[in-house]
Length: 295
Image 1 (cartoon, helix red, strand yellow):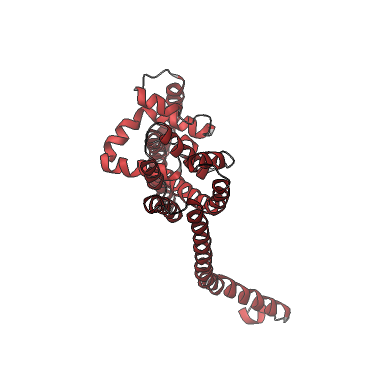
Image 2 (image 1 turned 90 degrees about the vertical axis):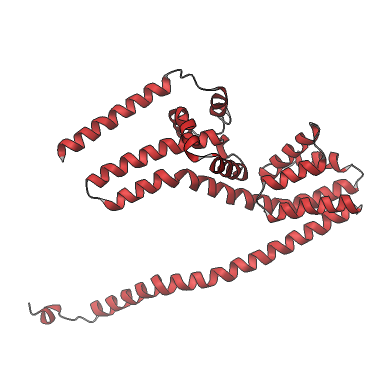
């Protein structure tokens, strides 16, 4: 066993030096992968950048193993997450290759030592660590957009009522905001500048965001455009509906939180409190434990 562990350690050290050499080497990558490696380089951390460079040459193989349908599904997930840290489908494949290799190698080492728990944890790390980051980014981004949208609609209604056209008002208000919703609006405005119709640009906005409120916003604008309804009234009514929906969602979350809190208190806090009180009473009673144990 000691010889096997020494051999695995030597292989691991050799892999680290090989990885450093690959990192410093000028590898000839395809044009699209080289571009993907540089996209968002100023927004990603040093660790993620190193992982991307180590795994980028294996990204095409990972994408082939995933298949077209799974690649399209993860591409949409990355879009919904807002490309956190400059993440692209190629960078995702590179990270999946590196984390998968690390998790598999670490799991094998602990499996040989008989530590099944650490083996399962490392295998889960290799398989799901990248997905956890994307899932978390999707939730955070959707929550930020849904919090921003009602106030944005109120300001937009005021600017439109002041006399600006909808396109100019949208550009003016979006320039005053920061965050994912402002980024989405800038993308939409840029698409309109490049010749895409307003209906198609807002349909793309709805496709890029897995949010019920964004869908309500786009649907209301399209219906108002078809029916000729005043845009200011539409925006004000939509903001009120979104705030009402937020209040209902908050009440539902609070209603679901009460049973969860009750279960946690009943499962953990009540038994722990009873044990603490019992131990205190027993120790404070002056009982001679030697008579009980016969010592």
